Length: 139
Ligand code: CMP
Image 1 (spheres, rainbow, N blue to C red):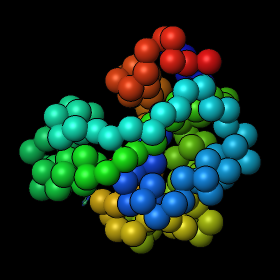
Image 2: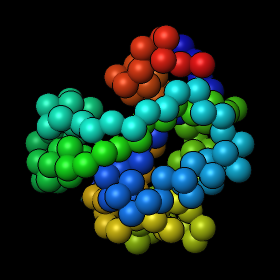
Image 3: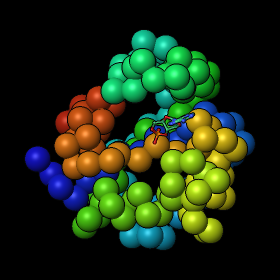
Image 4: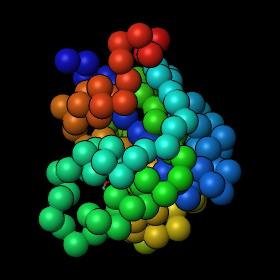
């Protein structure tokens, strides 16, 4: 299992507001290398499966609706200490608590529409990357 990978999604609102380029620049400037990337639209079933761990929580249904409401960009990133460093770059899940200069502080519009997803562990980074990309889709 690779331990220098993380997975991110640029969420529908950030994509719709044309923040994809600015977010990718912040990612590259922070030293991450893009190993796989695609723009796509998730079905409700796919969004529900991706966030299955949150099933039953009060925000699950609206999260699934939101994540399947428009295009997203799925990205696998490589860097030493990728999971932790990426979580620092994006800031707290709730943008109200995100540090100045972080991706979520700059581009989130709400707790749910928080601009980007970031993996929370090496295990989940690998599972999430495999959810979106086959081996031949990665460089
Ligand atoms: P993400 O990093 O994609 O992981 C799970 C997502 O659920 C999270 O970002 C938010 O978009 C959403 N989320 C988590 N907790 C809440 C909450 N209390 N209210 C609304 N949305 C939430």
